[in-house]
Amino acid sequence: MISQRVLVATRSAGKLRELRAIFSAFDLEFVDPAAMGILETRAEDTLESFGPFEENALAKARYFFDLSGGLPTFGDDSGMSVDVLGGELCVHIKR
Image: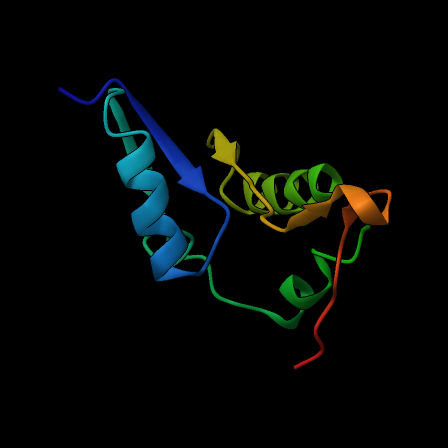
């Protein structure tokens, strides 16, 4: 029995699959924005515009939380941390 529904702040099918596997031991139903009927907009392109991973994850979680009407939302931002370069390194790739 699912005890909690959680929105995952990603449009990536691969990331959603990975997160479902990681959290499979918990009684959570993970849904993505499309499953919630949240249409993709250009505003999403600016969500990962911060340096630290945490700020990007929070920006995505807050954005989709608001659009979902307050459904608990999980946001993440994966990246690379390189100690020899002074810690966190965030590379932005323009599409």
